[in-house]
Length: 185
Image (cartoon, rainbow, N blue to C red; front, side, top):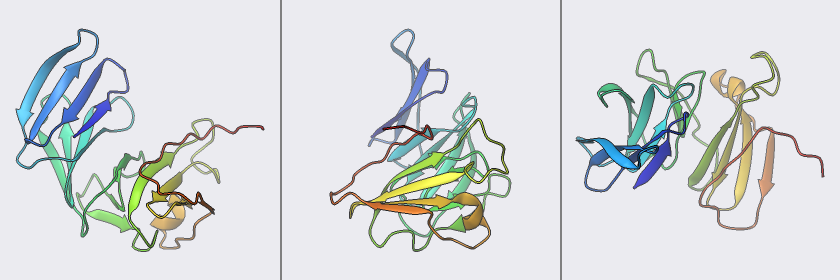
């Protein structure tokens, strides 16, 4: 089961074990739409921007749907089970691999990002900086062994993956959240 809130904050989409997808109107507090999926989804996420698309994950398959009618637009098939996903503006959904929304093919893959399961993924986008900035497209992965790695997405796309930073939390991580805001302590 999973839930994702629309960028407007007025709606949420949820998936359950019984292969149903439901759109919840958060203003009225009622279900406004539901449909049956062809496979049970474990993860659902709204896309970047205005939320015109959402993504569902079922094992190794990521599907892209239109938010208006839940019609499937595109399907991406990975080689391994997808445990986490984050929408990314430059290509499409990002899991352990990234898919190109135009072609429906896997654009690139992080084969050795972590030695254990990746349990959390965050795309950090600095909205105040230009696309050519060194800090404009950062990706952070958290694994179940407690390691957090930060990567530059542009280097991964150029087949030069080299993480920018890493931290060992010395605990078992199950999720990850992040923000690009800098903090002064």
